[in-house]
Length: 295
Image (cartoon, rainbow, N blue to C red; front, side):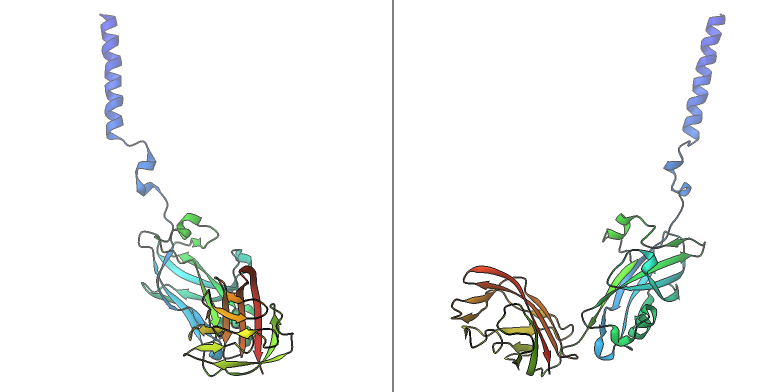
């Protein structure tokens, strides 16, 4: 009988333990309420990401942001900037602090504000330079978040739309005419020497420049069958140069453009800067710089 009673006692204890396991959740990881909350902001839209060098002090760049709905409420957003890019927060320069005002809160800066933060004159924001803005948020509960203390996968995942950093560039819109006399600053193809004066002509199409009086140098080769013509983006000054353009014969030999050629044309400063991949007699002569300054 005693043995039977002991068996019943053990069974009762096990039954009690099982019933407790079913009614009480002993694993805190199964309840999201047991986790702490963070915060981040997402990109709602770009306002403008190009500073116009012609009016660089008053030109404005910026984005609009939203806070992540399931995180802690955002109170303030500090906007920092560096020339180029640098993920080390000690290198960041404070532009301004913005109070989060709901969806579509604007984070923006003029060229003058950027220059003040960097300790330079607005004119030092030169065409071709780019600037990275780093956003640091402070929640109403006092936590601070930026790229230095968030999971990198959160920022890099495009589906999250996180906006802890954004980039703006200084551009110089293309305004014709740009024809005239230019000084050679650099010619890696060595058709000309630094200091030589050469001629650039406009066209034949809109936003195009004809460089056939420069490459080839008529003392070394003949134009053709196609003139060396570049197309310039009217907004940014970026150059398009198609591959396979045979622009010189009789060097002796034939010169044509390869893929990957790039460049910038800044009408406001009179600067033409190209990196042209040249194929010579079927061989790859690599990327050759041609830099010209209008006189």
